[in-house]
Image (cartoon, rainbow, N blue to C red; front, top):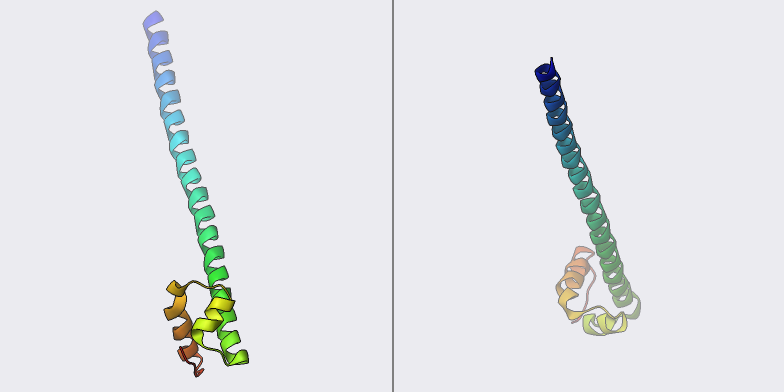
Length: 98
C-alpha cells in the first residue's frame, strides 16, 4: 500500500513538473509575441514619421519650386534620404533640380 501511494505521489509530482514546464513555454511564447508586436509598432511609427517628412519635402519642392537640397535642409531631413525624396518626385512626375 505504501509503495502504491509513493508511486502515485511521484506520478503527480512528475505531472506537475511537466505542466509547469508547458506553462513556462507558453508564457515565453506569448512574451515573445508581445515584444515583437511592440517592436513592429515602433518601426511602423518611425516609418510613418519618415514618410511624412519625405512628403513634406516633396510638397515644399512643389510649392516653393526649391531644389531638393534646400527643401531637405529646411525640412531637416538627413541627406541619407535624398534618394527616397528623388524617387518620390519621379513617382509623382514632379520636375526638380538637385
